[in-house]
Image (cartoon, rainbow, N blue to C red; front, side, top):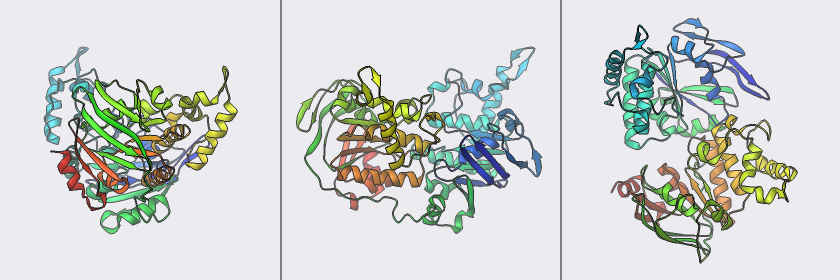
Length: 487
């Protein structure tokens, strides 16, 4: 890709960006949210037409005006949100839009045979007739890879491929990537998890503010140098934890239960404390916090807020008791994507912004402006649709709407998933400030360095139960947590 330029109304997304990918290579593509990574890939995948620049594949200039043209040119994009139809089976999804037919009838047997050939090529075993809705996240991702190979792809782009995978599933994905590389494919690997980039890529390319900062060999750059290239400044510590003085008990949970998902969970948290919740995917962490927030109904259990027994039957009850929940799924549960940033900010705060029957938009705009400035939300305006923000800025809008409620108990479920290292740092500083103000913060995270770096105390869950508690966080390793999480 040579000197690619792309602008949108009010945003110069790409400024003469060039990228080179070799056969049999994994190129890591990194940068902060809003740096231009998605726009560059959408140009390569035919979703956007560039304003200037050109694309060459195997030395020949190609015109890619659509995703279909990209596939015909040998380019396949595997987006973070999978493009699979849940109610169709695996075979049907792989050949969707390119069905093998004879006299108007789908040649299902031939598609089935070719599906099995693709699976053998990447060394996995999935039932070709299984509905995609019945597959695990890792299996759906493998189907996306098989779908990419089915169009004879020369170039595969993977966008945050491990965001929802377990450690074992990630290792399996890396094995598939290494196999594809040995077959001569070129792979662009986009991730905010820098450890993965160092493990799987030969070179890494950095974008910042729509510009190509540089491309370096992985063997010749350190993690600290890569972070400095991404954010444009030196970050001395990835986890700037500041211990706050602990105050009175804010929340106590006793014997909380819901089926097999949550089994007799009891814990407490004090003002100024960051309580980390660790565990494997499906351990029951999110399910526990949904019960605390009133999003689900418990079978039994008691909650005490500031020492008072409290019945929380709905999120409204939780909010009235100054509890907020930043959900794991910001797009599905944290935001209404087709509404503006301002409207999303105002939704949980309508009681504060209404005067009688009318919405006081002036006050709402003023308060939102303050958060845009303090959280450094990159937006073209208050009325920009939430769906058009980068992942990190979407997360900041979710943060802003809950910060505006001034809750005393803040539950952060995977607060930094899918966002860049610079924005993570800002969120960590915010957590420090909230703890210093006497807030009680519960943080669920699948990233063990984050749990160890930002928690005052850690609770480990396994199969709906609490398996252990760590109070000496400074002298705890990731292996210690994993051994308890897998017990």
